[in-house]
Image (cartoon, rainbow, N blue to C red; front, side):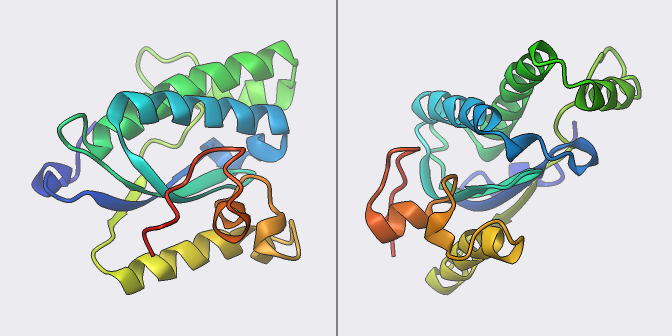
Length: 182
């Protein structure tokens, strides 16, 4: 996969990332699939030493703001591994639950790729370098308001898989978020 110029940003360290499930399937409507993604995030956070400054897991995609330590791995390294291994875990879980609609879509899309039997995540992820406090706050507000805008909750902090809970209540029970950066 081409890096689309990411190698030019080896010294950058704070990113707003978006990645989506193929066909925008609402895979993350279940607690179990959200927990599988969280488990994978925690594993790669330990491996690559990145900090999470904000996140939200929406039914068909997730957003997060992270700071990387390029001594341990770049944003491309983190996203490559997170997407690859979380996809395997989530698709295996879904197959065991016999969700034929999702399984069939993963298979049909996977057949379009050489040596791939199934496909979970869209091919690329979107990344934007966070280069100012104001831009960070804008993206954090966007993340926190995403579930409200989608009609999933009335208040951002009511959504379980969002850092709005970390910021408002200091609740790090789902995943630890560095909230003292603002």
